[in-house]
Image (cartoon, rainbow, N blue to C red; front, side):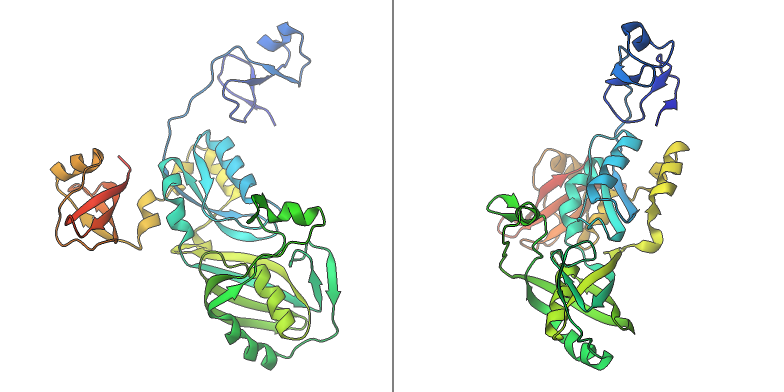
Length: 343
């Protein structure tokens, strides 16, 4: 889609092409080069630049979009170079996808460690090769467990458990994503990994569909939970629908839909939806340092402030309340060493 703009060229591609592509509409500079109207050709005009910003966007990912699709769209709309996400959602899933912009990309690893909350619909009677509704049917069963049987099974899947990832996943097998091997028809077996499932609540049972809410830690596959639950019930099951309701304190109620985000960009209001990057680090205590220590942290030097807890992390703020750095305690040196500096 093309949009009018005040650029010297009459038409401009809305994608951040870095000064590259322009529509060769009648009368544009590209028309002189013989390009056909409506086709793209190189533009002689300098690229438009947008000042970099930093923060975290809570996006409600629509069904059918990959997490990369959302990142690419945000990057395109905002013309920001540094954009990434903090935790993949499968294409069929919806809900909270945290998109990191600018310096916030440096704290995405900490966002991934936050507790997740999912609402899932599991359908009994059919198993698939992807463990979800988009896969090929691999097994069918007439056995449909009762509500009481399901309630008795759920405690087996809570706490610290071992869970095998689905064959179709982005996890690497000998340096290659597992899903690529699975698509080639190769057998993909991955060793079970430890995951933490804090709680599973049964919300509704309308045979053959089970609706549950799952609170879990990083690396948990709800698709695997659905498949494993079907097997444990002596039946078959797959994940029919999934919504991520929360990541830490970022909730679906506060999320921005893609149409809403596009409208905010058009009105130049999208930055109002950015959360400061230190909100990715609220699990760590705050530490206030002096103006002199701010300069030391900026220069990568340790600071000595109060009691130091070895190996623990803190959010360091200047006396004016500005977030400065993520620091780590060094008990031997009785100092806080900067891990990541953001000013």
